Length: 167
Image 1 (cartoon, helix red, strand yellow):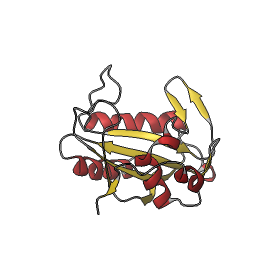
Image 2: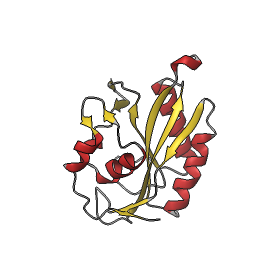
Image 3: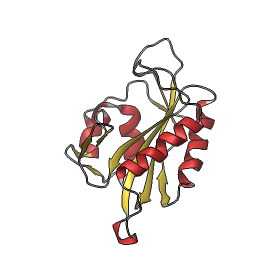
Image 4: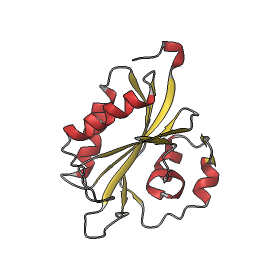
C-alpha cells in the first residue's frame, strides 16, 4: 500500500557486499532500488572498503549508503529490499555477520522510531559502525538520527578503523 504523495519520507539504506564482485553487487542493487515503484533516489555515497564485522575468515566488504524518497510504508519497503537481496543471490544462514552477496539495511525511515519483530529503525548498530556513519555523513552531513543525535557528533565518537573510500 502506498501513501499519498504528501506523505513522502526520506529513507537511508545501507548497502554491503563481500561476494561475487562486491562493487558490482552494490551498483546493481542501487539500480534495482531505483526501479522499485514509488522510490526515488536522492543521494548515493561513494563506495567504501571495510573489514568484516563478524568472522574474519571472509573477504572484506564494499559498503555505501543511499538516500531515497518514498511513500511506501516501512514493512513494504523492507520486503522490496529483501526481494532485491534474494535476486542478488543472498542466502540467509543462522550465522550472523557471515559473507553475503548483498545486504540491504534500512538505516533510517524519516524521523520514526520503529521496533517490530522484523524491523528496528534506526538500525541498532548504526551509531557504532564506521562503514555506515562515514558514507551516511557524506550524503547527509546535517542529519539528526532519531533517538541518537546529530550525525556529526556520532561520527566524532566512531573511529575510522580500516575504512577506506574506494573512488
